[in-house]
Length: 448
Ligand SMILES: Cc1cc2nc3c(=O)[nH]c(=O)nc-3n(C[C@H](O)[C@H](O)[C@H](O)COP(=O)(O)OP(=O)(O)OC[C@H]3O[C@@H](n4cnc5c(N)ncnc54)[C@H](O)[C@@H]3O)c2cc1C
Image (cartoon, rainbow, N blue to C red; front, side, top):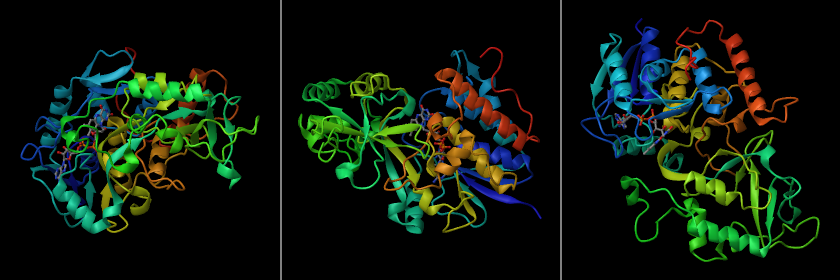
């Protein structure tokens, strides 16, 4: 019997999934609405178009992005070797000639006898096995359909991310663990501000340079001052409402007295653990539109974070994604329709390579070749993150970072060495778990 699949969206995740399943003998129907209907950010009718930067980030094996690429290589990724063929000089980063990259993938898909490409917007899920890979700018027609199938609460249209820092870079002599009013476990780390420290921080927020919103996001960030959903308000925007707004709101010090003095601080910023092992912490309430270098400069003014090492910067942008932990089964299919799988940014990952990775993952699951991944791998943890609801936190998209990996026993103090060891551990366990993986071009070449 012929194995068939429909894939909606021929972006990064959809194309990776299509090529993977075609290589395994599936008859693939791939639906792409462009160029007949454009998204707000794509410019062409080419498949797998990169909408912004032309960089797929680092290839170095002491970076999380480099590790994810190495894992994808082991698993036989199809798009990364094409990216290497289309690469342009960018130091250790894998940057591509975007039009060459998209053209090459379009040609591969169009020439593949197993794949039928339809230039058509899909507004209702087809019958049979389906992968939905319509990305952060999924068409509204399809989103209406998904809302009616899943319920309005199960889709997000915005993404407000607070920065995440490495636990090892926090000054534990300055911060203290304490639950507000000592109710419950002391799960949060607290950064207490003196009066002058607080106003210096607020002034820096007010003067900080912010990212320009994309034109299409102006519809959301509209008006004289930006018009944000209440739970997405950037910290610098709150500071603009009044110099004391933060210390009466997200940075209120009540019930968080400093243990060494027993006194109430002027303001307190809380850090929430990002993972069970507490290797990474989220700066609570610090979702922001500040430019990355500004985040680095300004958030280091927080007492105890002078040497903060940022695993991920904060951001706020238009992003359509599903409430995956509630609505997806372990195999990344919808609980409401077990034959419909979700890949790419819509599933709740973020970043070009992460999207390619979930295209590969879902294809592997559908083909019956992947039923689990070692917990030491970035891809295994990205997968897990799509399924585990963090207590009291709403689901927010995840990208490759070292904070999602389990701790390394007897880790060296040297950060670079520790990261190299985390990479080596992952590659070693994944290689032995998938020793029969396809051999593709090495991800880290001599010239990188
Ligand atoms: C403005 C913007 C900038 C970004 N910049 C970066 C960046 O610089 N670096 C980075 O790592 N990540 C970036 N991202 C995040 C993300 O990595 C990319 O958007 C990535 O391309 C998402 O991959 P995907 O496969 O999920 O979706 P896409 O690559 O967007 O592919 C989805 C495809 O589905 C099609 N489609 C949508 N709806 C339908 C429908 N109903 N029927 C048929 N086809 C449909 C679209 O036309 C599109 O071709 C950015 C996102 C946005 C929105």
